[in-house]
Length: 332
Image (cartoon, rainbow, N blue to C red; front, side, top):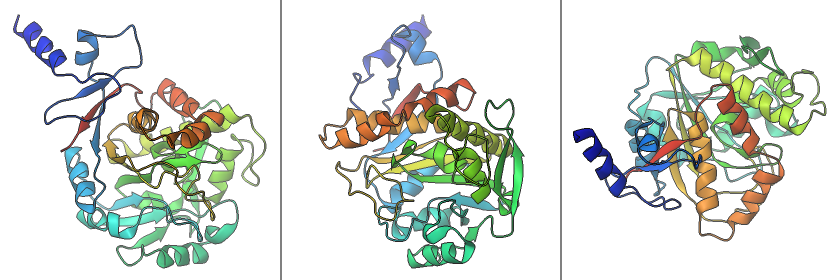
């Protein structure tokens, strides 16, 4: 009887679908299965995704603390240092307090497409020019080679090739800039731990869907998207519980921070989101874009859908990376 009364009270205070502002202590259950509703959807234990609409350095620290998973040991903060010429990447002034809070080292790997970050010297200079070396140590993880992480039961790949320095770290804070991406449709947590942690050879292996470490090949689009999910699984299995995910949905260009001349954002910022589930986090970011009242969202949605970007999350969920159903909790 008491349990039924509690469930009724929870249902009374749930927000209607499509509204994402939560009052203190209220939780919005996002449920994309129309057959699963009512009591089951409330009590099924979906992963939490936290949201702060106000994008500030203090709220980055606050949302990290809300996750309830303190870092330990040597901490890697994986972010994009941004291609020279670009300007939408996460700014050092915004992330500085969080990086210091976790006593983190900013980590990256070299790119596989030429440009200004394809070798360690130029990549470190880009990180310096963009202000990252002023706030924390920066480690280009494939500066001294690469190592292989196993991909278990992969359809396309049997291994993930990552920077050798990655094994030096005990905990990974995945600090992503959520935005569009020319090939994947969008870039968020899964892209950051797949292509982002891969060495140059590893990036080519992903882009070619497991066929080459010397060129990008020409795989079917879904094979490329599935390859990202497979190597993300390798990183997650390597880390165990020693990983968490924070995404900043600002400067919402249709182009990635790997673009030296990205399109200007055509919609407003959404906020900071965080979760212990990368699939739930990426899904929440895309849901909030679609739910936005900003007409400019049509450009980012077109980029995501024209690249079949949501298939990454469908496949990631299928192989056990996380859940596309989640609870969104706004921190006031």
